Image (cartoon, rainbow, N blue to C red):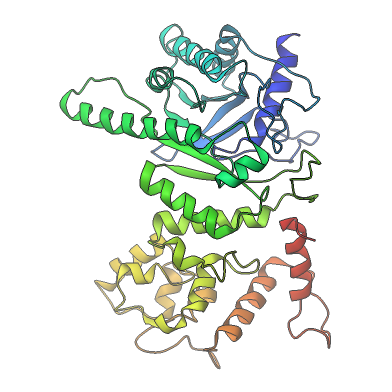
Length: 436
């Protein structure tokens, strides 16, 4: 098998791993156009200073000893198999970099022969890139669960970020779909990476030239929709990972149907809307001061399809509103739908020099079509004929306003629905979410 065939197979196999900022697009190039996002192999990430960089996203091998029912690379699946040698991978990365195709490498792998064998090959590849080729671009590598701690720690000296994919949210799910894996084997390397990062940070305070260990931190991936785990369980897991293992990101991947196994859901379309809602909630956990128990509960364990998690929380907690925009503190401002982190900071700065009204809020970038139901300026509501105060009425208004912006094909007025377009929206949501 030549190198071109290996690249095609192993880049295509890597597209199901979303532990980077972009993964998978069906936008193909047109005649006379520039760029092509459809072929696998290139993904994007962001550096701490905000730069977007292109990465070669590829597997070392797609030959796997495990038979995880949800995975395209499972051992029982009949598909072309390939593997790079460390030399081939190093040569490929350097040649792509010199041609300005990429600025870094996102390297993962199926488990070939054993976890130690696979981790050793990953280590050889990144070590040669750093030491022999003097490559200083961004490198993200997957730590292999079950591999020797010494191999993982040594690899961490040469990469910018490491990730350990949890994949399934519970031990029961693992037992059902990936019985060869255990929760302990996945958590162990995450704990090792966390403690090694802390140790390295302490050493850097004493020795300025001490070698770095995974300076970009660690991340993980959760597959959404392959099991019956609800959103509350998934969000609680993410919250505990952020607190307990200092993860930089938890990535959510809508389950893509790749098998007809009876333990897998019978869906034709990935639950992309559910994935999107979890990303929104994840943002609220990391930057807005929310907790999982506030956003969901045992009686309400899944997110609303029609409303984003922040708006849904606000409607369930109307006793906190309205707030006076000229008096509320930063953390309460963050809880108002339509006000983000930067918007809240702008409000605090602007309040130092003047008393704000709704025209000022619009200039500051606040999304008033959402925020107007939850705040007052100078003790007064938004100037319109009437502002609804019940959660049902506010929700209906929010949905109508979203429909006007999002859909140009508004449904004709009907005696069977009070709100034009809502029935059409519901049908579209079901298609997007993979629920029928």
